[in-house]
Length: 84
Image (cartoon, rainbow, N blue to C red):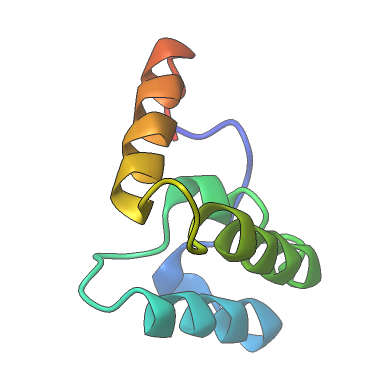
């Protein structure tokens, strides 16, 4: 059970539903919004900024591929015992 209250995909309406839709369009085939992003669902404006920043930093072309960056992020989360 999360310690941070968030809005589930099916319960989203208004501005948070719009931001969730942006994420879903950018991530076809994924089951739903990742919990780490749902943590920001009380502030849709901030969540949108977080997503834009993340895509620009983590998923832009550079020395490492997106796949490698995702593997590093997953490994660091595991080291930190992050539930999200």
